[in-house]
Length: 401
Image: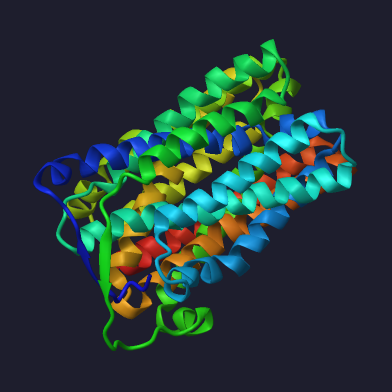
């Protein structure tokens, strides 16, 4: 579905009042299943015999793939008649659930498990923009949907899931994650398929350019995203391999679960009030705050002499990732022209969950296996400083302008 399409929703009076509630529940379930495959990726794949380098390759490959196939997945909504966002999400997550169960309870070669897990991660990441598009379609038609609130509730869900899942992993084994993922997907699909239908009325519009065209057209956006990609790569490596940091400081899987809980739960306040903050402060001020917060977050975790400093560091997730994620989503929507909306959001994803995550996961895994945990921590701090300087520099420069 194009951002330029005129959409008429089949909304009944009662449904109108429950759209926000349904969308909140959708995010709660969506980020719960995300925790199953993303929050415990290192623990799960290590249980299958993979080392840090191979884990980095799996997560990095999925990030590269999503940058390549995301535009294609979106285009399917235009090319296939009667294909809706709920139906596409149903297809992607249903197959991913079956594959996850298979690699969990069937003895398979490590190489095949890697390929399957890359598929699972890629399928899930393909759904992220689809879930966001549901809200943007309503907002475009004047239906009040608070995206930041729903996304923040998703973060709280991720946080609670981290604690609950860490206990399940301790009581049983990492394979139980696939069963919980399936249960979560079933609940999610029962919600996403209840959203009111919409009808598209196509009309001629100016065609959007490709990614290179978007970069040339919105240079400031690209520079901001470039800086964010550096800090994102650092935070990704620290998050993916946080279990290694926690164990190095004497913790266990349960402590790791609480750390992930604190990190994810802290995102909620900033995400929920981002739109209000943007009305009170300019975007560049919020970008500077996020840049400083990334410095505090990543350096505290990387240099932590004890678990206490790790927990203090992860709390800065709120004003770093939490604040910048919502701010940039709204910034792209407010800055890009109508025909560039989808490609602008695609660029945002490519620079963060694509380039940033790929670099952080692959480099973090290789460095640990080759030179030890400390080398990954030095890498994270270096990338953080570079990215934060770009964000702070751009924010201060254009705020004065």
